[in-house]
Image (cartoon, rainbow, N blue to C red; front, side, top):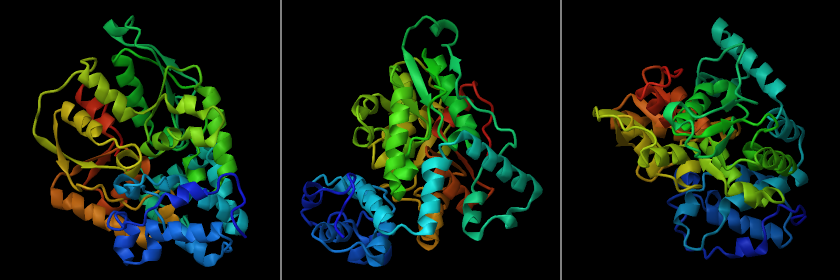
Amino acid sequence: MPFSTPFAPTSQELGSCVECGLCLPACPTFRMTGLETASPRGRLTAMSAVLAGRPIDAAFEEMMNGCLQCKACETVCPAFVPFGRVMEGAKAEIAVARNSLPSRLRRLILGKGLASRSVVKLATAAAAVLQKTGTAFLIPKGLRPGFRGLRPLSIWSSSRVGQSSPPLGEDEASGRGTVGLLVGCVTDPWFGSVNEAATRLLNKAGYVVITPADQSCCGALAAHDGAAKDASRLAAQNAGAFEAMDTLVVTSAGCSAHMKQYGHWTEGGEYIAKKVHDITELVADAIGKGWLPTMAETLEPVAIQDPCHLRHAQRIVDEPRRVVQAAGFKPIEIDPVGTCCGAAGVYSVLQPESSNRLGVQKADQVRAAGPTTVASANPGCEMQLRQHLGEDYRIVHPIELYAEAIGILGRADQ
């Protein structure tokens, strides 16, 4: 049957493609396979066929599921096709038309499980026990690679939810404004030092930082997998939680990219979306204005990995490099075009072979560049890098390196 949900790709969106083919060399899946059906242009053609009446079948589902949703095609598209949005719409249609038990369970986890702090806390405690007891063999085989990419977890994880922290020292009366911090669903218990670094840096820059107690998961993973109603619900909840904030800052590139699209997901979402900043934007801005210090350059090299949802979705490229440089390090480029590392949310679980190929490619780029410290501003990318690079490499968020360098954060977990 043709498209039926309010999230479906529109004829205007699909018709904006001029079929020039510039997206082909930018697309990781096309580069791996050489198949038109594995390209943005091919996927748009398939969506147009469904819009015209072709049924959503197994072949269509497979074609859509092969996409990383990295948005590299959007960076080079002369017609500005909103490919990320139409892919999310196509996934929402698949969720309705091909509603299998495995997909329902997956969307239950992504749409509701991640939004429950109790569920995430329990899963974190279980993962911590497996880490500490060396019993990772008990984890389902498909989840083991991602498990290897985790930082050391705590059984009793702490949270910044519901907390408020004032500016530090001489900046106490600076009145720079109030920043609402999205702690994230798994960033909070798994990458807590990133949120801690963000809070301390923003306080030092003169901001009040508040983490509203009624915030939730941003909804990005739900949206990417077709759980559109849950993504819409989570966007509405966060829009209410952060409504009173001057600025909304996010420490995960995938989450900040999604929240900048809240106008698509909930009524009044444009108001919140305009407030959203990735943490690298705000810290780089504070450094540039002299609100945060610049350390003497040591020439110690740090490899820069560009998360797709930072480079391609948000067009944020310079800021992570400025933060690393202000910490005294020398940013080293590993990939001039920012090819996807293969993490892509739950892609590594659903498409392990393709994900592994891209992960190996990214790891090889890091090894060829030389540095053994890598700065990555997205949790999924960090996990993908860690599992493919091994224990000899340190993978951290750019703001952690900076916070350590200026002495307001101890060495982050590896």
